[in-house]
Each structure stands twice: as C-alpha cells, then as structure tokens.
Image 1 (cartoon, helix red, strand yellow):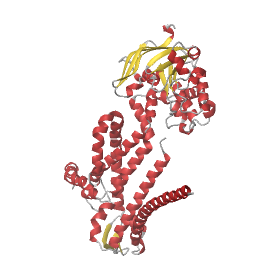
Image 2: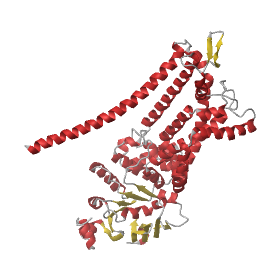
Image 3: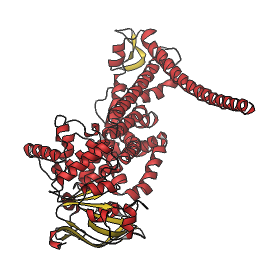
Image 4: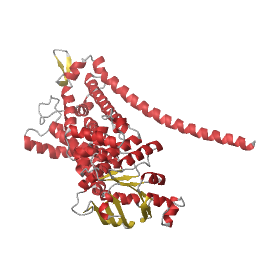
Length: 307
Length: 254
C-alpha cells in the first residue's frame, strides 16, 4: 500500500513541475506576442490617423510627389504630404544595394565553402562575423568621410545621393547576405558534390550546375534578408543620402528614404499633430514592408526546402 | 586468371589517413565483365579501397594513396590522368540514393550535358535507354519531368544508377547500394545489377553476405585493411581456403 501511495505522490510532483514549466513558457510566449501585437496596434492606430483624423487621401499620400508637411497646399487645403519621393528612395537604395551585393556575396561564400575551405573558416568567417556586428553609425560615418567626398570628386555635385547610400548599404548588407549564403551552401548535402564529381563534373561544373542550383532558395532568402535590413536601415543612409525629400531624378542627386525622413523629423513635431501623424504613417509603411519581406522569406523557405 | 582479360589491375595498394595506414597492400584484379563483391566487417577497408579506384579520395586532404592502378592499360594515379575523364569511365553509385533536386530527366542526362551533348533526340534516347537498363523506365516514363526527390528510396537509387549508366562507363563502382533500402527495393536493385552483369564490369561493396552470394561472380574478403582471400563466389562461400574467411562467412565474427 505504502509504495503505491508514494508512487502516486511522486507522479503528482512531476506533473506539477511539468505544469510549472509549461506555465512559465506560456507566460513568456504570451508576453512576447502581446508586445508585438501592441506595437502593431500602436503604429497602425497612429499611422492611420493621417487618413482618418486629418482626412488626407491615401492616393495623395502614396503618390504625391511633394513632401512639405508644414506648408498647406492651396488646392486641397491639406499640407503637402506626398510620400512617393521617400518610398522611391527607400526602394531604390534597397534594390540597388541588393543587386550589387548578391554577386559579391555568392562569390565570397563560394570561396569560403568550396574553394578555400580552410582559409575560409579561419580568416573569412571571423571577418564576416565582425562586419555583421559593426554598428551602422560607423558605416555611415565612413560613408560620410570617404564615399561622399569621393562621389563629389568623381561625378560632381554635393556627393550625397542614392548612389552613396547604395554603396554604404552594399557594404552593410554584404556580410549578412554572405554569411547566410555560406550557411546555405554548407547545408547542400555532401553527396551532391560527390555524385556530381563521380559522374565526371569539373569543380566549376559541380558548383554552378549542382550546388548553386540546389542552394538557390536559400540564396534568395539571404538576399531578401539583406534587402529587409537595407530597407529598415536609418542612420547610415541618413548620413550619406542628402535628405532632400525630392523625387529622385538621378543617382547622384540628394534624395531621402522613409527611415531618414523619420529620424530627421520625429524630434521636431508635436504628438497628435498632422506633421507627427504622417511620420507614423511612414513608420507604418516600414512595418508593413518588413512584414512583406518576412512573408517572402517564408514563401521561399516553404517552397524550396532542401532535402 | 589471364591478365589481358582484366579491365582493372591493382598492385600493392596502400592508403593512409594522415599517419594511419588503412590499406596494407592490396593486390586485386577485375575481369572485363561480371560482378565482384567486396565483403568484410565495418572498417575493413573495402569502401576505402573502392573509393580509391575513381580517386574520390582526392576530395579529402591528408589521404595518401600508393600502389599501381592499371585501368584499361593506363595508370589511374598518373599525374597526367584527367580525373574528369576517368570518372566518366568509372561510374560510381553511392550508399545513399542521391538524385539531384532536379527532374528525373535532368538527372539522367546530367553527365551527358556536362560532356556537352545538347541534341534533344540524343538525350531523349539516352534517357530511355539508361532508365530501361536500370529497370525503372516503366515506373517513371510518364513522369520524367517530375522531381526525382518525389520517388521512393529504391526508385531514387535506380535513377542514380541510370544517371551513371547514361555516361556509358566501362566500370561501375557500387558502394553499399542497397544498405539504405527496404528488402523489396533491394531486390529490385539486385535484379537490375544482374541484368547488367553481361555488359559491365561491376564492383560492389556490400555488408550483406547473402547479397554477395546471390549476385556476384567473384568475392573478395577484406579484414582490417588486408585482402584475405579472393575467388569465385561459390568457392568463397562453400569452401574458403582461409580460416578467417570461413569464420566470417559463418558469422563467427564481424
């Protein structure tokens, strides 16, 4: 009898521990989900105020080309809040930097995983990891003191602009894209390499016909990840892009991005005013875009899973 | 055994992983046609020996191979040997079924495309011929454009065999081709190999002694990096001349 009672007792204790652990992790999870939900709710409620409380039309906001929230447009009796220049600016620097970074990232990653494995692991890996960790303000500072004067010397003008922003972002996202590409290439099963070689492929044929083909979904994910980072980068871009809220007419004229306008303006507006609300709307666009990037990454991930 | 009948002659094959000698001087010949089985316990060096034959050890650092390998009259390890050409002539099938993540068609023509064959008709014919030779044509002929990863393990392995056959090798190396498969799939692979024994020289590494006795013409017994005995399969299994072989095939160790 005694041993049975004891057994039941012991079981109930482990059940209690189990329940305690489960409650703990559920609490943590609920907290995180709550925080994320609140951020979304807050940004959305603020961002939508522009359209609801201030009655700015969505098309005027998204496709208007003049940004000057403190001046009222005599025609519409609304301030000039056309965000298209910044939206264009953000997308341009994002795509351009991704386009430039991708080949470099693939090349570097191939060098590290296929061509010089030992040196790759010993020298390149720490360098890439170090580059990922450098704060963006440092990149921006270097951009400001090196790239901007360089651009000024080469193409004239002020040196600020989308091209300078692209170059800084390219350097910034390159390590991220590279290290993710390295991970992808490493996860290509060894037997793909062996059977490609065993069938008479040269090393280069093995790389571009088998490894890169098998790794394409992962490489795409890496690129989108880099784009998400570029899209959300504020400080470094702000330091080199010139911050003129004008429609970009060329790559070397001053422009602005969603993030740079946000960081410039957020301290100079009064909470609840239209000038403040439109900034929240910009933040909302940033948030929605990062959501889109996330969805793209997930879609690629589920479609092209490596086996 | 007459030397001129042999497609591959190896003498005093030694192999080191770093400082550790894994093969202690193997002398082994392979005839122009038929299946030779390499048997022996794990770690006996049979797979290591097999992978030396198409220079797969080149991929790893700190592996040293010595000895003479004469394939079709030429030295496999000569500095002038083009490993790409060599591996076209000596095809290899691995333990894990490993089709590439492409369509079945693209898998089979992979080697031909590497060799620069572009003519659609030639490729189509090669696909049909190779898949038929690997006894899988009937199962996949309507789904050639589907991913090879959607096939069962046994089917994938036969596609891997077809992929190797497409490049018309002269010698086929099979590294435990059925050990990752269920008995029915293994049986299908065995049938496939039996059908090919008149056309190709094949060397199969296997853990299954019953498989060796079923499909091979000759059997070589490896133990701790030494070749203990090689003879007709019948002889090895019914009346081996070495005590160690006798012990192994009767299950006394290994």
